[in-house]
Image 1 (cartoon, rainbow, N blue to C red):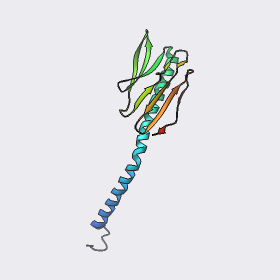
Image 2 (tube, one colour):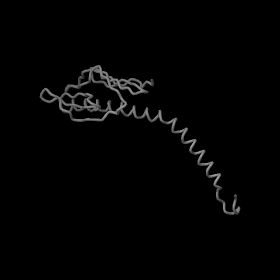
Image 3 (cartoon, rainbow, N blue to C red):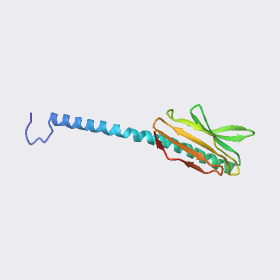
Image 4 (cartoon, helix red, strand yellow):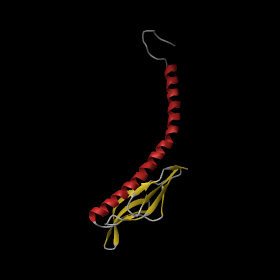
Length: 146
C-alpha cells in the first residue's frame, strides 16, 4: 500500500525486512566475535601477572627488600618481606575461569636476583606459561589454544 510518490518514505515491509536482515547479520557477527573476546580477557590476565612480576622486581631493587608473588583464594598477591614475614601490599582479583599453577612462586631479592619459577595460566580455551629466570628475566611462552 503506497501513498503519494512524492512522500519518499519506506513501506512497513521494507522496514521489517531491513530490520530482520540486520538482526541476522548481528547474530552471526556476535557469535564469531565471542572467541576474540575470550582471548582478549585471557591476554589481559597474563599481562596482569607479568606487570605484577615487573612491579615486584622494581620494588625489590628500589626498596632493598625482597618481594614475591603468591595466589590465594582467587587473588594475586604482591608481598614484601618484613621482619621474616611477608606483608601483602597489592591484591588483584583473578578471573574465576582462570586456573593458576606454579612450580614455584617467583620472588625477587634486593640485589636483583630471583627465585626462579614458572606460573601456568589456563582457561577452558587457552593456556600459557610465565617464566622467571634466576637472573630476573620475565618471559611468556606462546598462548596455546586447546
